[in-house]
Image (tube, rainbow, N blue to C red; front, side, top):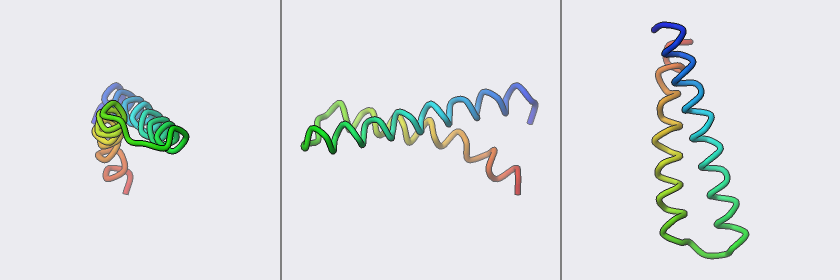
Length: 59
């Protein structure tokens, strides 16, 4: 995997983690689950999944 690919996957993974965490905190603060929260959580999980090849490659 090239350095550029590693950078892109790492960046997308960090963005996904931030989206997921922010959506979860927002959901807890508001006290209910909105459709937007579900979409943001799924997007965060998908983007965070981009970091999986980096984790597998480092082992």
